[in-house]
Length: 72
Image 1: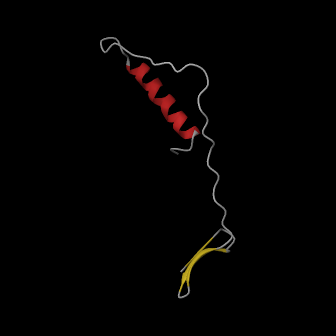
Image 2 (image 1 turned 60 degrees about the vertical axis):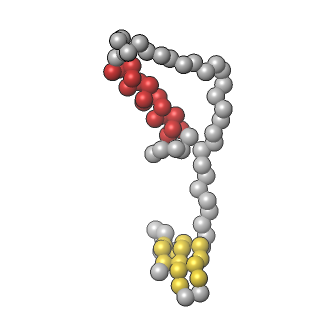
Image 3 (image 1 turned 90 degrees about the horizontal axis):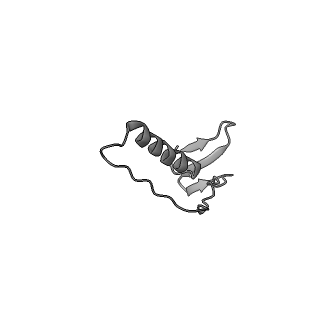
C-alpha cells in the first residue's frame, strides 16, 4: 500500500519489509506565546447579560484557539 502526494511521489508505504516514510517533513505548529499585560476577567450579572455579549466572548475564544492552531 502506498500513499502518494499530488505529484505521484510516494510519501508513505507499507509492504512486506516494513513501513516507510519518504520525503516528509513535520508540519510547523503555530508558536504559543504568553499573554502580555494584565489578565482581565469579565463577569456578567445573569439578569443583565445579553446574547450579543456572550457571542462576542465565545468568538474571541475561538479566534484565540485558531491562532494557536488548536482548532481549524
